[in-house]
Image (cartoon, rainbow, N blue to C red; front, side, top):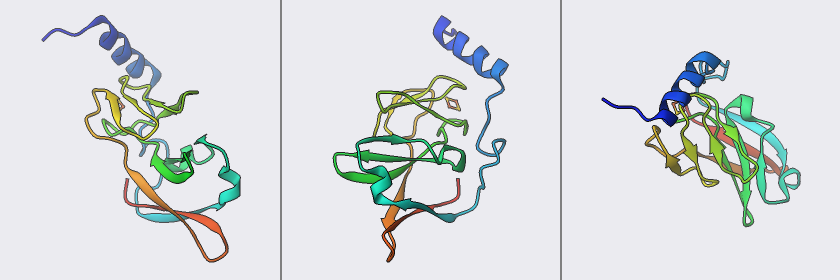
Length: 131
Ligand code: FES
């Protein structure tokens, strides 16, 4: 098996950097709901990283608000949001577009989208299934 220079560097960087997986990073694994505040807190298009350590990003795209898993679908490392709204996994180099679709592996599955709906008080509640 041959490995490209890029993948070798990404792999060794991930090993040396001690990738924090969802479990290692203390993100609860079980299903839960989290109140993330009023929709007005997310009024402009972009990625909101405040809940990355809870395992998700809040994303507003073209008037649509949703929550996107912050955990890589390859081996559960925590993702980094980039300035252009895409996501990068520091462990082995997978990338995802702003909608969570895989743009480069080794991850093969897109990022799960979590339900983010307003409650009766106008607060957005994110429903997170088991990670
Ligand atoms: S955990 Fe391997 S690419 Fe993300």
